[in-house]
Length: 219
Length: 361
Image (cartoon, rainbow over all chains, first blue to last red; front, side):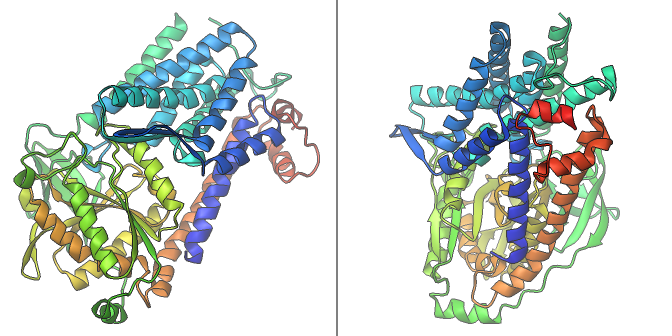
């Protein structure tokens, strides 16, 4: 590959991994754990586990599904309360429902006139819904990962039921899959919204929370 | 209750965005006619256009949409773009001698594998996923193999043809990228009246080919330059085969690499056989444009590499702006900028858990 393009690919990857590490690190993960998970996602990107073969072909990518799913489950298990867990799961379900609904409505082809690519749109939806319902960066991440996974599972089950000729690799693009990208962008969005709201409500002098800058909205 | 109201507002906003997207596609069988300031018809499309959208026509004239009234879209000429100069002498000799490709790999896949051609198959979409478009991609793959290139052609189905198809094909594209293709082509067909794509090249009926570049990704500049090279080669070798370059909203998985491109071979109203003939011709265009034809590598590297380098600067600038913007929003404000970079560089004050890190800056 020409030098200019190689530099472009490397620069984009560095920014992506840098942002991913910072966002994972915003949750209950240490710097080292965040780096380890990114390493696992990259390594796991090359491993696919077949789940269903035949006309409806369904498999699962380790880096794009199992690792982010593991992080989401860890965040759910370590949530402060059952209430928080339920809100994060509802956020995931609502995200999946919206993604599924949109997918029935437009194909995002160049001729569709869609104003935003589905990869970015689904990620933004996960961030907004996850943050509103989960009210935390963790909730946004969970909604991003599980929302995309649930939407994929709905598609996979429907395809299996009607014996549809289709090929679905859950998390198949590995560390660059929509599941991971949605989780990361959702946290970025929640982070920006959260910081803006905290700044507006308390100003720069407000001390940060002792463990992480999460917020709980008052009704 | 407050939360429910917020969620309702968000859902309403999302629906508005989607409505803007989906209802933008005409379903009445009609189409728009793009007309310039002098009343000349530039092209036709079923796609709704917005003011500011850009279209590079076959004659390299670039237009921007100025206003829309009914079925008429008024466009404004902005400039005549200059295509890169591509020296094809060496490549022509190699094509004649065949076995030009060596071990260079090209990938071809189909996000919408159901797409078909009505005059040939009587349907615009085959529900079992065996769309005519697969035969067009196969024709391109076979022709490139005959030239000596190694082609990975994927007929993986991404059904249904819905809004998640690009998410599913992204996984196919990623798996193909692991095999190191120099370029990865997503082969589609369009949905316009037949005359938009009808042409005759070297005495044979063909469909024209529209090149689509997605704007919403970091590789846009490099991919646009690649598109211009494709057009430059095609204009020299097969004049009239290019319909134009569509600099579209969207991404089309082109964020995955700087040599990812989407090609539309005709529309559903054209014949598949004509699209296959266009693919046969295009097999001689792609290698020279992508820089994988003998003698083309350095030239392509220079022409595509320069905008790629520009994109790198853009990425670095955007990342820097994001960091500054984030810190400005952050409780600690811009004063924490030095601390941020100190911490990122691992120079002191590096507590391991993030919440405390942020507090400490």
